[in-house]
Structures are given as C-alpha cells and as structure tokens.
Image 1: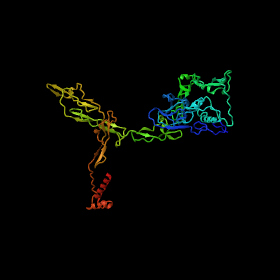
Image 2: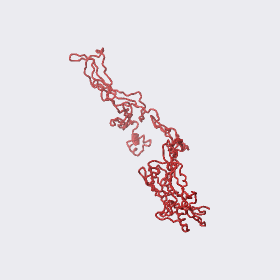
Image 3: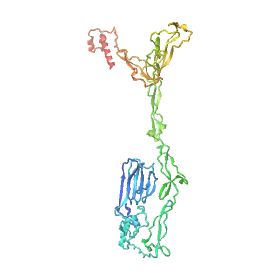
Image 4: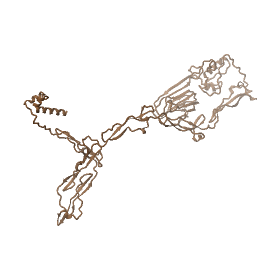
Length: 624
C-alpha cells in the first residue's frame, strides 16, 4: 500500500498546490500574468512586485532575446544582474529564499531566461527587465497564503501560549478533543519536503493511529533536570561563511547525564540562534560561461565564451581578480567551430557573344552559389571574395574610321600679302559608327588654305615687318612677317632685289605660335552621299567634342554644335522622255480611267499615259 502525505499507510491524501496535505487548493491564491508592455527607453524597467510570503515563484522570459531579468530587494540591495553587471546562471540567496537563475544555451536553445524559487520570501522583492530590444513577453507566477491561513513560520517558531497573529494560540491539553483540534491544525500547516522549505528547529508531531494510546508524559522534575548545550549542528558550508545552531539536551543537574526531554520544562528550552561558521573564503575557481554562436554559418569559424575567476562567500558568488585562480589551469576562451560545409560557386553557362559588333563591349555568363546538396542558394552562402566574374569586357576590333575636321580659322597668317588659314584634322578610330565609311585612307584633308589681305608697303634693307596675328585663336598656329631687301635714301627707301642682300643673314619670315589652350572643340566628318538624287533626300555626318589631346570631351558649347543631318537634292525629279513610248490615240485617258493598262495591248497603245500612272503609284507606295 502507498503512504499518503500524512505518513499513514494506505492514506490517499496528497499535497495540494498550497502545500497543504489533503488540502482543497483554497488555502492560498495563485497570482500569474504576462508583462507585454512595449518599452522604448533602454535600461531597467520594473515588471512585477513579489510580496512577502510568496512561494513557488516563477519568472520566465517567453522567448530568447538580448534582454536580461534582474532582481532587487525593496531595501535596494541588488540580488541578480544589478548595476549593469550581468551575473552567471546559478543560485543566489535573497529575500529569505534561494533563487535559481537560468540562461539557456545561446546557440541551441530558443527559450528565454528565468528566475525560480520555492520561497517563502521574508520581504518584498522587485523584478526588473534590462531592456535592449523589443519585449518578447515575461510570464510571472507565485503563490501567496489566503487570508485565514496560519503561517508555517509563525507556528514553527512560536512558544506555547504566545499570541498567533494577534490571538492566543492553543493551550496544551491532553484530552482527546484538544488532541483532535491539534491534529487538524497540524494538518493545515504541515509541509512536505521540497514543497515549502522553512527553516524549523523541529518537526510537527505526526498523526498517531486511532487505536494507539498516547504515551503518558512523566511529571516534570524542573529542579533535578535542566537544558544544557551539548554541541552544535554541522556547518552548512565548508568554507565562505556558513551557519550552525546550538544543540540543547535535557540533562541531570548533578550527573549531567542525558535524559528524556520530558524531564525538562519545554517552555524554558532555549531557542537555537544562528551562528556564523567557517568564515574563511572558499578557494577561487574558474566560472565558465556558455559558448557564443559560431562566427560563421558555414565553414570554419570562431566562438567565444567568458571565463571569470569567482569565489564563494556567504552563499554568494563574487567575481575576484584573476590572480586568485592561478593555481588552476585557465580554460580556453576561444574555439573553432563549424556548423556545416559551405556552399561553392559554379559556372553554369559559357560566355555569351560580345554585346557589340566592333569596338569594346561586354559579355556575360551565369554564375550560381550551390550548396553541398546541389541546390541553388543565396549568394551570401558562398565566399564573395572567391566569386568568379559573370561579366567582362570584350574587344571586337576597331570600328569605322573617319576624318574629323574643325572649321577654318578666322584670321589669315599675314596682315598683308599672301598668308594661310588653318584647321585641325584627326582620324578617329575605335568608335561605333552607323555611317557607310570604309576608313580614313590616304586622302587626308588639307590643314591649310591660302589667303591674301592685300599688298604690303615697302621696307628698308633686310627689313622685317611685324609679325602677323597667330593663325589660330587657340592651340598651335603660325605667324608670318615680310622680309625685304631695301636701300635707304635721303628721306626714302628703295626696294632692291633680294640677291642684293644675299650676303646678309635673312631674318625668318615665319614662326610657330601658341596663344592659349583651345579646350574642347567641335570636330565633324565630311557629309555623306545624299540619300536621294531628287525630290528631297538627306545627308549625315558625325560630330564629336574633342579636347586638346584629341580625347572625347563634354565641355563643348552645345549651341555651337554643327548640324549632324541636313536636307539635300530638294529639286523635283525630271522624267526622261522615251521617244518610243507615246500615246497612239487621243482618248488614252479613258483607258487609264477604266484601268485597262494591265492589258498588253492598251499598255502599248497608250504607253505614255500608262507609264505616268505606274510611276505615280510607285512613288505613292514609296512615300507610305
């Protein structure tokens, strides 16, 4: 047979949620809820208040987050995660009970952290959340006694006859009616091990079977016997400050021999008081934290963990200087990790053809990131530094070549006499052109053309006139001057033949000049052939903006850009007269109106009229 919570064989009594043997769950109240408030400011935010006397405390984060739970007493003492210092998971004493702080594995678990305690608490405690990211929700639950429940702590430590909650307790009695009342009270406040742990100096008297006669107490001999301390309980901790209590036994006053406690007056038995013991600190130890997540989702990565030197004192674990743990080998703080094999790059297609028929273009190919199972995945799964190129330039050779010319300079190289005007000429290659040009060839356009500003006046000896203006307003040009052989006479100069001055060094009559950089200028090709010989066609040329070094530029004035297309051959087409094609009848217009020109006879008899109609129709269709 099974044993009930009342220690009776065959009893079916069990502990209810209030911790009462055979109770009906009405002697206590369960307080629970979920804190789901949206928080905006970082830092500590109060979640719930745990009252004094609470048991079965459970504070749990509903899912993993970067937030932390914190616990503080109403007096302001930090118990867990106070002052922005995050404690390791473990057991922490506070409020008269022991709290278990859990933080699941950061890699494999999705559960949040939690505080658990059996209670009861002896003071009000406040639960906080250190807010760093959106609140996933905090579930809280604890049990508090009902209004008419007798506190097990008061019942365990009171003396017989002392008031209980402001009322007198039960007087000691030996009659059966009072014994039954005492048993009921004992059942109401009795406790099961591990359910409501309360520090008690002794146990409540257990029930006796109804057929068992209570033992008759011997008369007390207070004068012959007294209470004596014979020792102390074992220290609760081997180091780092524990606690112990004195042990009192009833002894003979004369012989000091231990006797039954019934010989001593129980009301005079001293109440054991807690004493500190083993105050020396415990040896320091390495507190090893959980491994962080792997730095890489695939391939070889790194993971880290926090290693702290800790020391236990007064049921609290404190962080100390690392030199205190030098007697121990320090665990590794970093380690390699590999969650899975990385994906790799695969080239799925060959290069496409070049995007242009000539000049420089581009070609492409298909490159995919493929997992070790052969599936196409996102590019981030592969090492981007090793990604093969999926686009590159391609050179299909030079395109059409053309002569590009500037306009003639406005100035003549000589102020008088013969001079020249200049222009720039360049052959452009490696560009895409739609013009029907086969190449620059050897027919380079002339860069100079003659000019004359009228006769010059006579000079003296080898007489060098002033230099003319530079043949160009910008860039490289040339200057001219008159050099003649003259003879000076009184008041006059006579011009001589050049051979008269041949023995003298003749000054130069031409030199190069450079006024300023031209910057960008418009260049253009020659006009193409007109698209039609009559009735209005068009011709085109290519226009480029080039800088001083003959490279493409965008600095030319758009308003000065030469035209790239213009009309040509706008005159009407003159039909050729065929002497062998004439109308043989005067009424050939009737043949045309009746649409008889499709027949060979009428086409010959009315040749001129039928031909005009055919040309008119072909021209109309061409314009459409």
